[in-house]
Length: 139
Image (tube, rainbow, N blue to C red; front, side, top):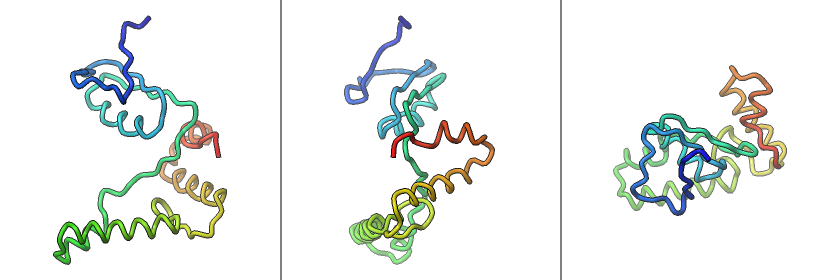
């Protein structure tokens, strides 16, 4: 009806040129999370359609462990080992992103802590807009 083409990310044609075009991305999972920001620079307009917001947190641009390893002058294998070790520890404690959380915190407490943390990042949004765009409808 709109004259556009339908493309599934797993069957993305190498010659697809969306420069200057209006694009709609259906879904908000991992693929959309990587696609939308990269498409925004070339497309005229990108709209993401989602049923419910996805839990997503910002990732720092600098890895402290990798930076320390570089300063220590270690090789890439040792740096990689140190970063993997720290990430495994963080994930086992539930502290891999956002505010520090202990491993004994309940899922509900973790959700509320993350929501408060994200809410503080976008104070300009009304409560209704924050709820609509940042709070998943699922548990």
